[in-house]
Length: 140
Image (tube, rainbow, N blue to C red; front, top):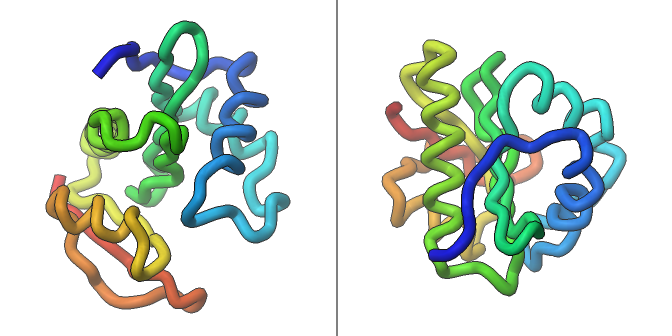
């Protein structure tokens, strides 16, 4: 797995927005749901972990210390299957642990590679949210 993990900075926001829109599954149906202010809040108050390969962000992940949820986990489709997602989600879970959470939650669409990724990595399905997505949790 080539590349390095680092904390995102404001200059990374355009690439993170682009990356989030580039994924094949779990696409953001309403792009206005995630705003510039959201990215800025996470950079200022938590950490958005990014995976950088040759000065280009190829993945990002963030845990929300306010509620113990995973706010984002996205990997460039051309870089999937290389362990980047596992490294990023582990970093975001560590952020949540440091904020005092004992478990993390997230949601994703059923029948997707993301669902299989979370199950393979020890996340447990806890039901569905109003949008029909599977809610997962994992002890930290």
